[in-house]
Length: 445
Image (tube, rainbow, N blue to C red):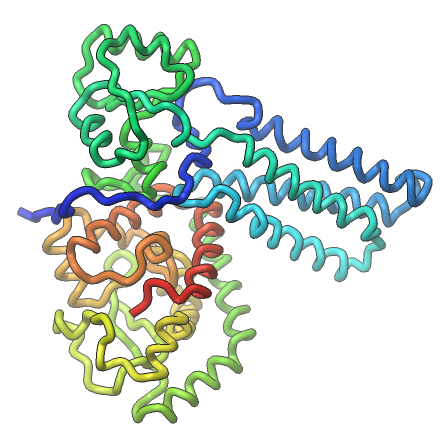
């Protein structure tokens, strides 16, 4: 029977502010500022009023000035798109409170600029720029006013798993309820309960009554996931619709993004990649590119293409020890160390993406020997092959490079979270965080 590796004690989650998570599975009334259908139209009205005032002062009114009208429409679309992206980011854990507000405007503004330039449409900077700036300020204000979940009082319904949660996440400072009657006073915070445990009739009745009266009730499984960004390996990971397969509709869009994104990146990066290849050949004998046998989509084997970062030698993909990269590994060349830290060694994997062997974002493909080793020791390890492996992924931006079983056990939890919550918002968040990781040179070997 397959044995599951367990962790050596609890792991403290990131100090990032998980309170920004707009966790949709919580039951209860939400405050007005947490209602997206209220915030977005309100922002549009306020920005429109500001732009109308500016147009009145500078041009005698917004109508029938075509440049002003175009600027107001462009501002409304850009601010709405940025607001939607911010909201999508808030559904993912491990995000600092204000860190991704500004990046959320980058893509909409780039699309706006391209549209205005290609379409040769008249516009007014005097109206457009204040509108975008006020949208940024309003979104930041709304995010700042929303109360973080970790600043609210946490109440726990007694149970084995909820008591373990209190020990594992002491920074929550939860209060353990002693009687179901106490649920009536929990509206100022939120209640966490293991809905799969055998609850008494009193607890079941009073929990239902509390929900009706607007007390937020969280099932412990989703509560843990929303805080830590990991799925505990108790079973294979179902999505919000209860299916084991990830969202098939998004996978079609994801494949299109992968193909056109990889093709564009290869065109733009062609010259830098040629220069890197020349530098590798000058630095040490051997080919510039290195093919490595990995396990990918649905367990199929394929060769990843990377820039060579180690001194050239014959490789045995079935040898476990040789497939592990050690800290300050002596096999790594001087230029290889630089390529690994900057992640530039992975650029040729864009070819794997074009060949439909990989995705831009997904669980990282493991070496053949390592994959077989993990499969023997970790329950459900093979389930991560339900998606195409990625050049970057949720585990990479949260954990970095790992090879030992205890660390891979945690990495697998991150992979399961990604599979379960696969969405364009999570992919965008990973893309932004990948850029930050590359700039910091964190987590490489």
